[in-house]
Length: 326
Image 1 (cartoon, rainbow, N blue to C red):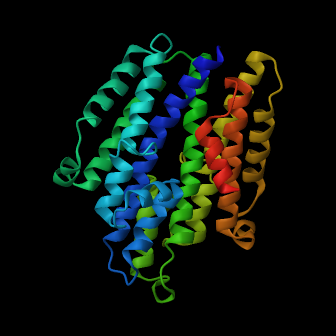
Image 2: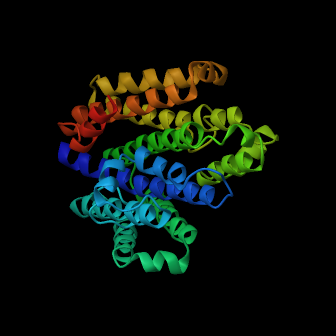
Image 3: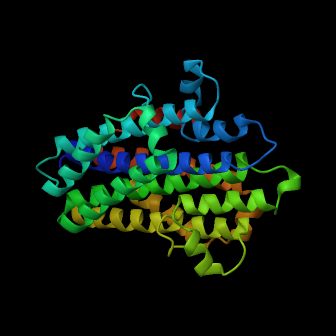
């Protein structure tokens, strides 16, 4: 497959997944902000900006760090390249360039999503409710993935769509977990209390994992078990481990198809192996924030290596993000 075609398909999938994950991150921040707390509003709304790499851009707007400003900036701002609006627009542009490679149903799904999204203004979000808007974004992403799985031939194009989705999901899960554990820790008096419990429950619901947690652990919500589910449990679809199983499987398929040994395949296999054999106790002993930061940095490097192996060059936005993380 031509590198340009691979690039379009890969980023189409990443942008769809990124829009969904931004909605999930905003949803958990919004739910947490509704809980009574002694924390300043900054502690609730600064983390999603930092994790999305949008803190400097938001600061440049000069707007107060308040819920409506942050939600509008991360959801609807056409000048923010990481907003939900811009992600859906970019996904649609990549899909349009690949009309001959994707199915009619895929195009109709992504095109109708963008047509509806571009008409939305902040007043609409207020009228329908933030949570309903976030659910709409997630549902449209689910629809696109379902149509993809149900209609697309299992050929090269499908593998690049699958690869983009899995890598973006692994990165988003790490960032979401880091938001709660490192940047939204409650005050010492709240640890183990109602607020702390509600925040962890909100996080689990934001990744559609609340029932999975109950079925797996049959216990009250405990941070170590939440981390274990979202990092190491391969049966949990949005876990980092499950995402890397899919990434590695896809890269091995592409390696065999092209009969070439790729650096990205070796890198992904090494990252998957670490996730397969490390224990949650080791992660906490090392430091959960430190582990997640290493994982996020590894995801960025893997994305750049995939771009070099299959698409000719690393994505400029990822290069900038990698430099900022250094």
